[in-house]
Image (cartoon, rainbow, N blue to C red; front, top):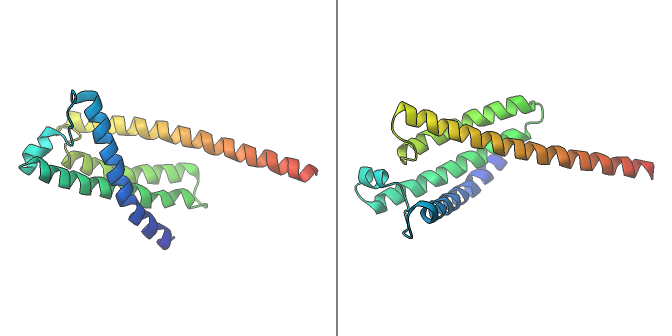
Length: 153
């Protein structure tokens, strides 16, 4: 398990950076009117300039990727039920995500901003969880069907 966590930490950093970069491009395409907006303007102001803001955001995206990747081993703890796995995973990724979202100014720095961002994060988490659960259930049914076919022969 420790080796898996270490491997996922190592892979998580570049994946997090890549996903952060893709998100900044998509956001730029939607809202930046033909310009590239690599970060939230408030972050550039807080960091003194845009390059410092991008460095911080890149590092934090990498750490976010590491956190999500390493915590994914929770789904492999077979003696835990799906409810426990989901609860612990959600707690861990929330603890990782919320401070990063705060420090990168992805959320408004207010109680309303925090609650709004957390609500959106939770909604996205639930949607992804439902999709993953549905795919997993479909795969298990397929495996069971193949086992039934195999046993008949």
